[in-house]
View (cartoon, rainbow, N blue to C red):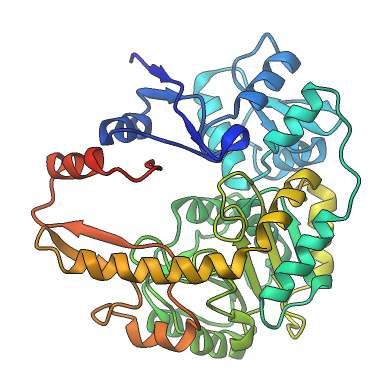
Length: 418
């Protein structure tokens, strides 16, 4: 199979997280593996600085993945890569994991991206240029500021990670209980989340997570062996909104911990701790940062929760070296000073766009929680304080690949991609 390579422009500059895919054909080719790009979301595309670091560190093996720490590499080898023949090349501040063939590399790359132990491109640049790490309190300041945004949170129980998936992995690890090994997912979450949960459980000889459509399904499924229930608020891409309070009531009656990914809602709009959730996580890469030039995640433990130990979260960071890079913390901190104003604008514009799309005959269906015909409109109005955030999804009328391509290719917004 021939593979084309394109150097696509990145949004966000030198450390931009996403690149622009001009046509839908580019998106499809990337997803199908016939297009390789040099810039893109770090869990899917290796940044040029990371690629350079890998080539310098392991010049004689092309099947290599760079991760954020040597201890993270050892953890993944022992916990995640038991069926792969891996070699870990440890260096100060990072590690390179290698395998011997393309088939194993595909599994290695997918497992590493699911775990979220991603090396910051800023850290890679410092290593390449022999620049020491900055010494400041930006990471702690980020934790304090996010705890201030998230009602019911405390800075002491707020933990910063190198990626959102890293934060999610920490939540799963810190909350898992051998005596209550069942995990339930409410709604249709991000595909890598399901993969992470499945691998974590199956490689322990347990059943994969059970996925239910809504809280009704969760109430039926939850039992004494259910240790964790997870949901996104709202889900992506259909923007379903779970009844957090009811879900928490059912979960806590079974001593089940509630984990909420509130990345899309943001702490400006929704406060899961107010309704009893035990853990809340965000990919700080998205709305909290807002400028597409930062990679990170945050996990908060409810100070009122008796089901989750913050010490286990802190221990996970120490064991895996998956904490936030200080330079990434400095960038995030500077951008969060405009967070609430930015979210107010995003809320307003997203609703205007959703209503506009709903008025078009060429659009069959629009999904946005603050549209009156959305299935969870009343629930969203209960939980979202200021607005329903910035994700809108829709179907074109008579949808086909040709119509989708015509729409996508002619869309003139600055950033288009998978």
